[in-house]
Image (tube, rainbow, N blue to C red; front, side, top):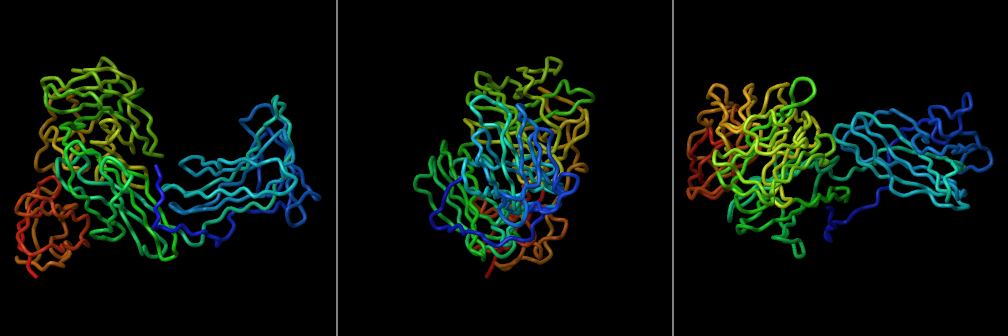
Amino acid sequence: MKRCIGTLILSLVCAYTQNLLQTPGFESWSSGMPEHWDIDDSIRVFQEYTTVHSGNCSAKESLFTQEQGRADLYQGRFEVHPNTEYVFTVWIYDNDEAGRIRHGVYWYPTGSQWYSRFSKDSTAWQELTLHAMSPSDAESAMAFVRAYDSAAAWDGGAVFYVDDASFSAVAEQPPFLVRAWHMPMNPGDNNPVDVYAKVTDDGVITFDTLYYGVNDLSSPNAMTHTGVSYDTFQYIIPGCADGDTVFYYMGFIDNDGLATVSDTHAYYVGDCGLAINEVHYDSPGPDSGCYIEISGDGGHVLDGFSVVGVNGSNGSQYATVELSGHVIPADGFFVIAQDSSVANHDTVTQEINLQNGPDNVELRFHGIVVEALGYGTPNGWVFTGEWSPAPDVAQAHCLGRYPDGYDSDHNMVDFHDYTIHTPGEGNPIVSSHDRKHRGVLFTMMPNPVRQNVTFGSLLTRDASYPVAVYNTLGQIVLHACSPMARLMLPCGVYFLKTTDNAQHLKIVVVD
């Protein structure tokens, strides 16, 4: 869901970089085709000298099929940059009631994006314009102009004219929100929540705001960041009452006056007491025997809960298992199995055959994510898990927590690569040798420390991030997500811990 912010001003962008399309005005032809362009077998193109938008020629396009599947005039593949706004424009002359035109782009390797509007019957040339943000993994693109039959009885015949196509990057790019997330994923009563936003820009971000509301967004509260580390903004939403749902979104403006508004995110307040504990998603050959194990107290009613598979390539939901009507068994493990071959299964559904990584699986309560696991190498895919992803394990392996049910809100720390499957049972012990970065955090300067010290100068280089800072009441007052984060806390005694509580340090902060 997108929201508009009154204090953010969206600027019209008129400056573009060079046109990435060759022969964009259809002036040069060879063997009956405009150079560098190609067509599907449901249309024909002809060099046109009379009905022209500019220059000497246009492309006259004739649709002659009753099958819609292959009716494209296209060019590609040309190199593009990820996370970049492009503008694809094309001029269309459409005075034929039997058809219409729209255009789109195919990003490699992600997929297609289409302009939602179609050409209209007119005796004048009309410009179709598609503003598109390239995906994080975009390497190249292909530009399409697609013909559609719109006759009352599909007769497969229509004539259009195409001219002056352009595909170029916007010269001044708006801020790009790479990822937004919060910790903890499912906070307890009155527990503050840290929100993080990783934002990039071709200049400098000069204004940022987080808006949040409790149970609705009719009158949101506004706040600016509490800290910035590299390109990651941090905010702290105050603790709320058990049973509340908190909604939030963010807006950013750069030095060009261009703005970006995030989607709306949400979290449920009140520890649900459940965890995704073990996942097996890739068996040798055709997948069989896959499963997801949920841990919790025996007798915990699962009404309102669901398990959802989220596609790592585009963030779409591709599998859903509703858990209402089920209860966590007395042993504390609820096993959702692909088939009955899975030991100790409690329910069976083909929906649980999750995709191989990079991918995600979420546990939701009335549609709100309360637990999430993402697995795969962090290289631009859509990650919806907690902090950083767990590994994408090999065939016949599985991902599991140790200790069972332990949740630090950090997938890489919480999940381990197991060769032994234990659905409905406790996960095997992971030795201290196998667990990363266990032990005591070592400081590079003696206590006391100054308020403005960076974590990189305070802690040794092998320190594991993020680092949580607790006060003497046991409350988390700061999360440091990188060595560049600064302490910036009032004078007093604090305790530093990694999110798996495996490393710890007591410090005294002075002016």
